[in-house]
Image (tube, rainbow, N blue to C red):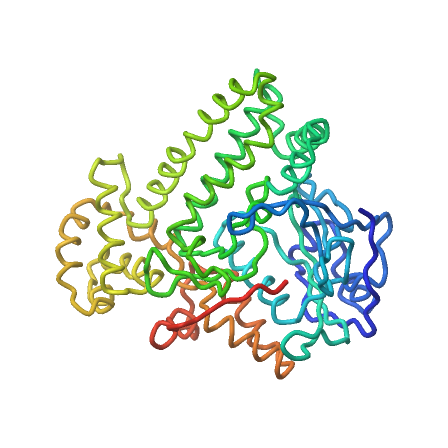
Length: 466
C-alpha cells in the first residue's frame, strides 16, 4: 500500500555505513551530507522511489493475527548492488502507515542504534542478516514513558518477504495471490527450484534448509532473537527485526532476555523447534500449490518438514566440530563431546563466548584461562581428557576463525546507547562498531570488550523498539 513518510523537522545524519553504500553502488560522498540526511529521514524521495508499506499477517507468540504489516516502515524501492544482487531499501521509524494499529509509526534513537549495532555485529560474525545503511535523528521527540529523541533507520535486506507475507494472502483464501507471491520469491531467492518437478515443494525445502543453517549459526554464537514470530522470519534466510535480541553471557539453554517473552517461548534453546514450527505455518500457505489434492499436499509438505531436524542437526554439529577444533573425519563421539561441554558450562554458569575462545589456548597447551572460568574445574578436566585426544595441529587456528573474541556484549551495547541518547556522545557507539567489525581478531587495548558484565549482567532485559 502506497504511503508517505512524515516530515522530519531537522534531520541530522548520525551514522552512514560507507562500506555498505559502496557495495550498493551508491555515492557515499553525496549521501554523507544534509541532502543525504533528508533522504534517510524520508523528507526527500530518491529518484524512482515509490514508497509503500507492506502487508503481512503472523503468529505472534503462537496466536494468529490476520493483519499486521509495516506500521512504522516504508519500502522505498530496490537497487541492484555491485554483485548483481537485488536489495531492498526501507525506512524504519518514518511515521504512521495504514498498518500502524494506533501507534505513532516512529522510532526512538536508542532502538535505531541498537538495530544498527546488532545487524553489523551479525554481519561481522558472517551470519546472514539485514543491515543498516544509515541512522538519522529527526529533530522531533517521540513519546514513550518519557520524551525520547526521534530517529529513522535505513535498512537493507535481500527482501522483506516474510512467512507472514504468505500468511496474509492465505488467510484471505486467495491462492492466486499466494502463487503470485511464491513465483516472485522463487525467482528472486531460489531460482533453482524452478528446475524441480514440483517447484513449490522445492521452494519449501530450500527455505527449510536456509533456516536450518541460519538458526544453527545463531546457536553457535549464543544469539537470542527474542521474538521469533512468523512475521519476523524472512523467506531469504536473513536475520531480521532486531528488537529484544541479545547475546548469551553465562550459558543456559533456557536463557530469555526479552521482557515480553514471559513464558520462555523464544528462549535460546527453543529457537530450533520454533523455527520448525514457523516453517510448518509457511508450509500451510503453500499446500494448494504443492498439490491439488490436499491430503497429498499435506503428506508431501510434512515429509519435507520432517527433514528440518536432520538439516539443523547436521549444520549444528558441523559448526560445533570447528568451534571445538575437531578437525578431520567426523567421529561418533563428537556429538557427546559437544553436548557434554555445554552441560559443563551450564552447570557452572560459565561465559559462553569466553569458554570457546579460551579452548583455543587449551589446544595450544595453556589450559589455565579455560579452567579459571569454572568455579570447580574438575568437570572440565574430565571432559578435556577426551577432547584433547581429538585435536590436530591446526585445531587452534581453525577454532579462532569461528569463535569470536568480541560479541555485542549486552552491557557494552547499553553503555553505547545510553551515551548516544542521553549525552549525544556517539564515540562509544562508533568504537563498539569498530570492535564488532572484526570479531575474531584479538587486538590490543580492547580487553574490556571481551569481558562479560560484572555478575554476568544478572536480570538484564531487552525491549521491543524499532
